[in-house]
Image (tube, rainbow, N blue to C red):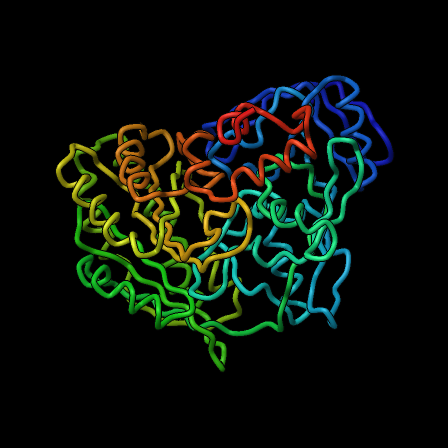
Length: 446
């Protein structure tokens, strides 16, 4: 990029160049970019932006499908705010800089004989980006990544560094764990950890009717249960992850490569490309691909079981429903696809989470099931996503903050009992909307 100057010891300011998210569906052009190397440099960048009348947003790896990180003001890149600050083995916590990629955190924790309790299905995101948007995996008893936070440090709109936990600024802590970037810029996160453990993963094909009729039992009997339904078929693939006494028995190098790279990424990429070019062949491809993944069982440390590489780019919409509504909603989605001319190349993903106490968590105050729909990058998505969204909102669904949706503050205030609590806190911490953008104006109001 051109026009680079230096501010402070590690903070680079750069003249405008377009920023795009991972999926390529969101673009913005900030006035300048800042890469602070410390919380103090970040606070100074926030104060300078306020003095210049510019709004501030932070972007991690751009894995959100919404414009939650887009800005025409100052874009903060946390690439220099990485690494572990400290591990407290007595409290069983780890404190990390906000820009630390989850994949580096997972590897570093494993090296120390530690692990997060639960995690999402990819680990490319930064710690702050993942938690601020409510990234989650699946779990009967263990919740989202944000629910594992024990302390947060953030820079507020006045350029001050604020620490919050259950004991210190608890009202901020209740909201800022999933803060949407609306309350300040997170600079460090303290997570609860535990001694590293083993998970046995059991992957098994199952019919749609069986998995939906047995959904409650499968959820109750397994610590982590999820499944994928392949549209245009009656086929599902299920995954059950449960703690194991061992020994470790990871997938073989060749068989693991076939399942995780060749089938799930390489051939799937080809299939999606063909389907995008010739939509009528998608149902036939779905029937073949839904049978390609065979049953397998393996045992490994958590991040190698919970997470998988995702190299095929897509757009995604995900809704959180009351868990008891999930099967009915999914059956409605299946019926809608079958009676419509839609051709859907991506499987539909179903996961669960226990209720939590985070103000704007998609699982706040209720047992939750997630239904996620995807379409290959470049495929027209509006008709499919709109039809699915209509079904989800009829069941009181809450959209994932980082995934495509059309909901606004009027709707969200109805499905989040503590919505007004969050917006009142935002009014207190950021009355001038220094951290605002068009997306936050839509979902939180002015």
